[in-house]
Image 1 (cartoon, rainbow, N blue to C red):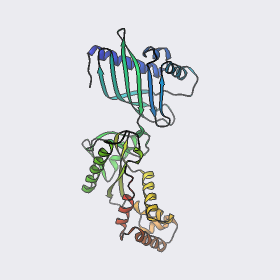
Image 2: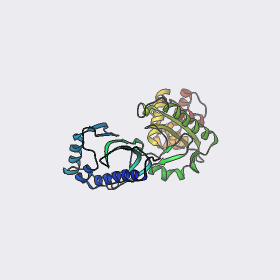
Image 3: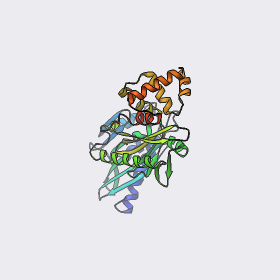
Image 4: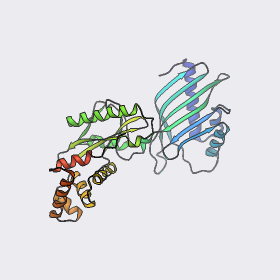
Length: 325
């Protein structure tokens, strides 16, 4: 969405593009020329590793001069891509927000980094100058497991590289038009229910505050090989995400369930193998125990959890101990 004259709109976009190019080229003088010079300027940045930082006035110039001019170990992105541009312009002020992807492939361990940015510009003597930057790093990009951003109805908005590779091969999830869908009818309803739950949570939770505790596991059923699959509905930075094929989350889920039900270490490891689709004999061989010992452990697991079948066991382990706000 944009408001304001085309002339002002083009001028504001030109300043943002030129300031970005100066940043990429580490040209301090050029970069500074696009910023308002005064005590009212602000740079507010939120990063995954360092939290929130606020720099203002002349401190901004000193900070950027060090970054651009001193021999520091710093590699700029190769390029930026912007999405979801929103602009509102008055006679002397402009507000521009967008999602920005930073290509960090020039760095050995670099990944695509995503930010949401707001830039406020002021017109001074007919020239647009940046007076404020608010930049928030989107934490979802730092997930190694497949991760898909969706809206409340399940329409897909964004996915990381892992999800792009693994979603087409997933036996229990699929892309249907723009939607992320579970193949199983019951799982599809559970997934939509989890997204509605996230929506309700978001309505009374400040983005970022206690969001790590907001997750709901969704059983997707078992594939033809007997492997149980789940996905997780997550709230991150006020947005909805679905994670799947996440071994770390799965291990954490089973560990929490094992603690809740009082399972021993061997029983927990046996349960993980069964969830992964191994039969009791194969699981025993992997764990280095006899089949009879494995059967004894399995019976004790049944007794502790209160189930009488392997499918019921898997379901209980994967849905126990919801961490809900």
